Structure formats: structure tokens, C-alpha cells
Image 1 (cartoon, rainbow, N blue to C red):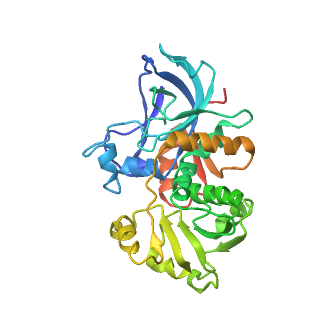
Image 2: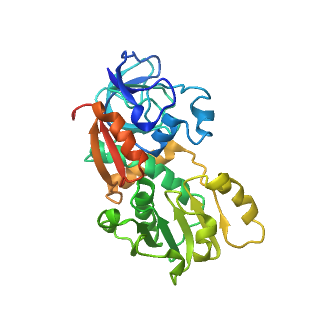
Image 3: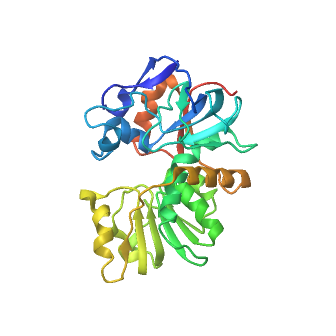
Length: 323
């Protein structure tokens, strides 16, 4: 089978393609033919080993998984003994933030792997595009107590996490201000936030509004820069560790005194996220943004593009034709 491949940590564009053997599923395992996967920020971090904390999960000196990939959508092609949840021909989607070697034509998954059935009428592309960003967005929102009538500013609303946040906040009744660059205005506008701002034309600190929550979905701003936009008791959450890892210790410091504070969104419970996101897809309340698609032969270019920070929503990597 063809697979994205690297044996050492490398720059994004150095990820190549190699022929690898197709494995047989063992007891409790399934083998999937991967139709499409994504190249996302998690993949870039796992490929480069940056930030260094990623190596604690992926391997200190070299990656434990030479085939990268954290999500996929495809078809169950073969099942091993003792498998009862899936059958050959099932359309499935999965995500594993520590990596699952999914950027390959075939993928072996164990009994505890986070995998869900793709809802009827949902394409492979929409299913896989919604998982990584959607999972992290859910782990922003489950750290706070959302109520109708509250307000939130989503910075980086054109990315996979930010666009998911906009869509997941709206049904709760939260007033959403989406912030993105000029290239993302049309796409984010289609998600119907209450307010839409171009960060290149808007000095956020001059805004007359104050928010219950600020969700920095790309980690390009800091609590210090944006805390004046929070209401008393408001909460700032970022997808990144921040300069010097400050977003890990600021939650402890800002908890003192009961004022504006920082919460770090440690992600957890991927199976719950997959099930919830599939429900939202099936109900028509979640429409993941898709930027572009690359074939597996251009996997290095896909990684370079994602690492550039310019992507809107998700970047797809095509492994095989529609089944």
C-alpha cells in the first residue's frame, strides 16, 4: 500500500511516500480502506516534534509511528475474530490525537480505537473534515458553563477549530463575534456569526464590546493582549501553550482573586466528541469548512501548506477513490 512516511522528525515538506505492507487484522481488530484523511495542525506537530512536549507522546528521539495521520474516513474492508460492532462495508470515521497512522491506503484499528459510523447522507469528506477541529472545539466548550445570552469572541474563526466553535456555540444561544483574516470572511460569513470582523482592519482592543469568553482558536494572541475585552469573571481559552508555556500556569495564577481568568483546554474523551459531531452532522447543524485537497503523491506540499498557517478549515489528503 501507499503511505505517507518518515522515519525521523523532519520539516513538514519532507514527509514522503513509501510502499508499506498491508497487515491482517487480529482478534478484535478491523482493517479499513482509507478514502480520505486530513493534514492538520496536530499532524504537523507530530511530524516535526514541535513543540517538544509532543515527543512525550510521539517518541523522544524518533517517532514511534513512521506513518503519520490522526484522522480518516473510509470503509471497513476486513474484520478480525471477536469483532461485533462493525461489519465489512461499514462507512466509518475516526480520530486519535496521538496519531493512528491513517495517512495510508489501509489502516488497522484495535477494539478501543475511537471510531464512529458515518451518518447516512454524509460524505467521507465532510465526516473527516469535522473531527479534529470539532474535537478540540468541544474541549473548549466543555471547560465553561455556557448559557443563552452570553457572548463569545472566536479569534481564528476560519480554521478547523474556530469554524467548529462558531457552529457549536450558535445553537446554545451565545452571541458570537467571529474574527478572521480577509481570505476567510466569505467562508466564515456563511456560518452566520452575529458579528464578523477582519483582524487586519480591526484593532480588537478598541472594540466597545466586552465578552464572557474569548476563544483563541489559533493561539496567535495572548491573555495579556485580550483580557481587557473580557467582562469581569470572563474566561480566555487558547488552543496553544502560549509564549513560554504561559497558558499552562496562568490558569493557576488567574484563579486567585476571582477576576478574569485563563482556562487551558486539555482535550479528553474522543469517543464522546466523535459521537456528538456525527449527531451534529446528521442534524445539519455542522458544516465543516474544507480548504483544498491533495493526492497522497503530494503529501509534502499538503504539509507545507498547513504549516504555513493559511488554511481555511481543513485540508484533505486523498488516499483512494470513492467506494
